[in-house]
Length: 172
Image (tube, rainbow, N blue to C red; front, side):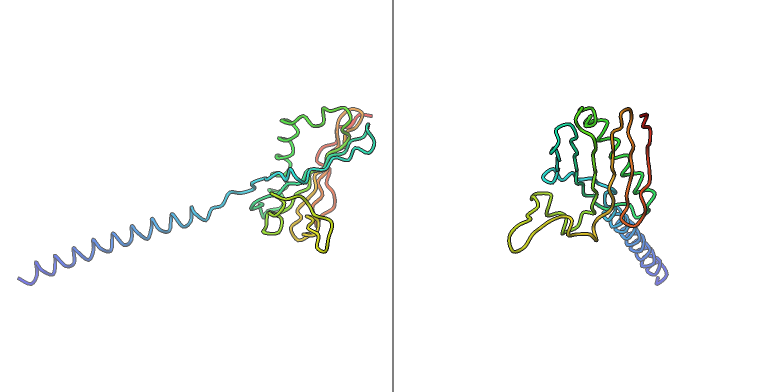
C-alpha cells in the first residue's frame, strides 16, 4: 500500500520540477530579451544644429547626433556611422544646395550628461555653462563631408585614431 503512495508523490515532485524548470527557462528568456537594448540608435540634436554662413557662398553646417548604445567594436561603429550619414545625405539632399560647401556630423554617446541637449540648447553664459563639448568622455567621432568642384571627400575622425578617408571622388 505504501508503494502507490510513493509513486504518487514522486510523480507530483517530478511535475513540480518540470513546472519550476519551465518557469526558470521563461524567466531567463524574458530577462535576456528585456536587457537586449537597441543598438546604435541615432538621435539628432536639432537644437544644436549650427550653420556657419558668414560668407554667403560658403555655408558650413554642423549636426550633432547622440548614439544610444553605440557598438563597442570600432569597425562596426564606423560602419554604422557611415551608413547613418549616407542615409541622411541621400534623404535630405543637403549637399545639393549650391552654397553648402561642407557638413560636419559630430557624434556623442548618449549619457545622462549629453541627454540634456535633447531638449535644451547649449548655455554658454552665466556662472555655469552647459556645452556638449564639455563632455569629452562622451565624444565618439566626427564625420566630415567637403564638396569639391565635382564630387566630395568624406573623412571620419574618431577620438583616438587619425583621420580616415572614407570617400574621395573629387575631380577638380
